[in-house]
Every structure is written in C-alpha cells, then in structure tokens.
Length: 139
Image 1 (spheres, rainbow, N blue to C red):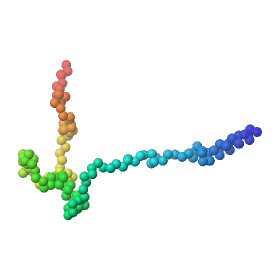
Image 2: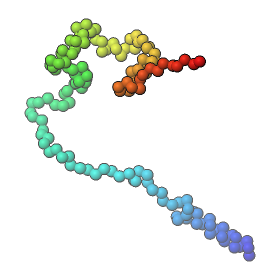
Image 3: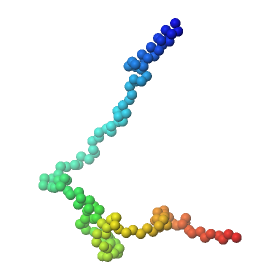
Image 4: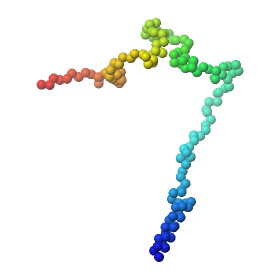
C-alpha cells in the first residue's frame, strides 16, 4: 500500500512539472517591453520657414571647410583687441603652419619632469598653502 501511495504522489508531482502551469514553464516578463518610450511632443518653435528660392541648400555646404573656419577663424575680420593681442604675442615671428606641426609625432618634446607637471596642475589660490617650510635642525 505504501508503494502505491508513493507512486501516486510521484506521478502527481511529475505531471505538475510537465504541464502548462508548472514551476519551470511560467511566463517571464519581456525585458525590452519594460522600458517606456518618451512621449512625442510638438516643438514650441513654429517660426521655421522654408528656404528662399535660389538660396544654397544645406547639403551644398562643405563641412570640411566649415570645420576649418570654425577652428582657425576663417576669413572673418578680427577685432582691434584681438589684433593688438596677436601683435603683442609676436604674430609676425610665428612660424607658418605651426598648428599643423605642433601635433606631429616627429615634433621633439622636452620632458620637464614631475615637478613642472605638479606646478601646472596645482589649484589656484592665494598661495597660503604653498609656503616653503624650513626644517628645524635636529640636536
């Protein structure tokens, strides 16, 4: 009788695992369905107008030239202050193409050591913490 009860219990347990509502066959949430999409909004600026007939299209702009103009100033007129600053810095003595040769791997660089790096990286301040302390002689 014991064997019959044990066999019936074992059959019941195994049938529960193989069916649709078993422990291992439950439905899991879809991890991609959990994230929410941002709602669509109407942009607040309605002042956009179509381009005028005959004006150059945005696709015809040379992006390389626009990037060079943004980096190196292009042909825009310099202000009097900027011109005076460049003249005081020695613009007339500057080597032509120095910006191109500064990042060149063949450019020789002098390593000034860790002390110079620490001085440059030091925080700005009034210098109260940067005082030299003379060691007291030990008797």
